[in-house]
Length: 226
Picture 1 (cartoon, helix red, strand yellow):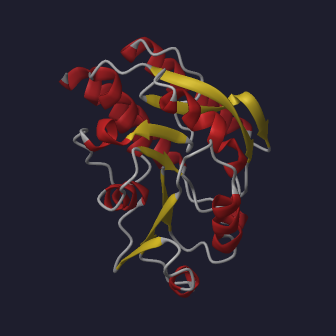
Picture 2: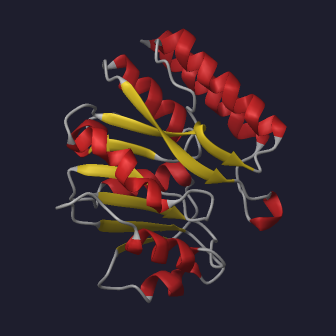
């Protein structure tokens, strides 16, 4: 199992995240590979990641290319049969890994999304809830996927399925792009409940209202282009 972590200026949080990821329980017999992509950080993140040399795979990008770019770079370096996406903050709980990957390991799914709205969702502001509701509705209408949380970070994939997608994402449009492409190829997205605790902009949250517009556009444009 490979865990891809895109990291951009997360020096205050990345050590705690890596310790949680390294210590999280996994299903019996599953080996853990951690792939961190430093997306041009300028706050000391690079030195923190280098301190884990030999324990994790690290790639340093010279410039900030965005979360989608970092994920694509991470995918070039994974060796596991299952890939999980992990943000480099403390909003998501690695203790949910087992629930997230078990449907794939048991052959019941090729893709699993961790739904904050089926589990616990603490501190999310109402504008963010509204945007998430709109995105999930669009996926249900445009792609006939009955999901509740399109924009969740916690997504798990069979590695060969994810590698087979022609991803072009650069920023946060990774989520709608991968959802659309998977749906177009006939993959059913399975959801499991997860835990989530939102952080604020002052705490380093980077997504903006423009990313919501980009997400809507990505879902609509990929449906039209099919």
